[in-house]
Amino acid sequence: MQKTLPRVEVYRQARMIFVRQLIDIGRLSINVAAHHIHVKGRLDRLPGVSAPLTPACVHEMFAAIGRIPGISRVNGEFENWKLVDEAGQVWVDTFATQTSTSGVPVGAANTYVFQKLPPDPSPPG
Image (cartoon, rainbow, N blue to C red; front, side, top):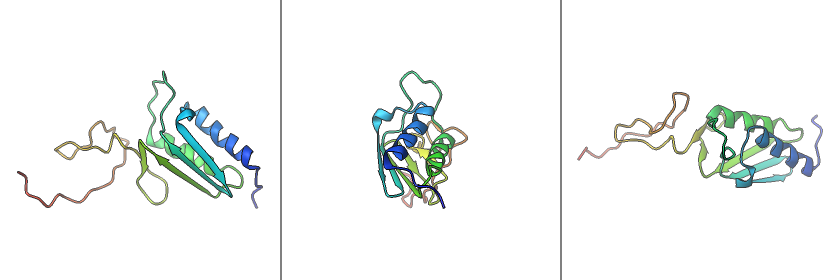
């Protein structure tokens, strides 16, 4: 059985995970309640950090938060990132999901995973 930490300690550990990844925590709201952490806001690097925020990095942050003792559920609700799959494995930058007329994502890197949209039934016009 996992040891349950006080709420303030869970909050501190969650903030530390974001700080280690150079995330601007001023744009985040972190709520802790009964074995559950809910993070919402905008997920961005600190100003001046040139390293891009990748889906793998977002996934690792949420996996690390899920390993905090006593936490059984972690939710994220962001303006600029969304969860693509039900298992919480694939995060997508919402900028990268915008598509051009050719159907190729605009600004997409090869490592992104995208939702497959159904074909448009209307004839090209």
